[in-house]
Image 1 (cartoon, helix red, strand yellow):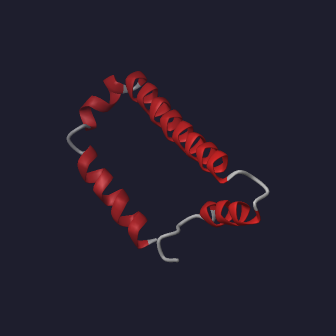
Image 2 (image 1 turned 60 degrees about the vertical axis):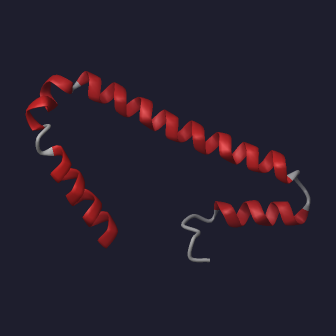
Length: 77
């Protein structure tokens, strides 16, 4: 129970247990949608960085520290 951060896994298990949807199709659809979302966010981030790279080059030495602070605040909250 502690390994589940989102409730999608429980919904997938419930739908698979009810046998209303083929579990293989359900898992493949879920995997494709998660992959598409992650790839989409990555591509948008890369385009954003390419567009503003000349402005961010001055702050590149601070980015690891900013990222570390961001991750610390996320782990606390």
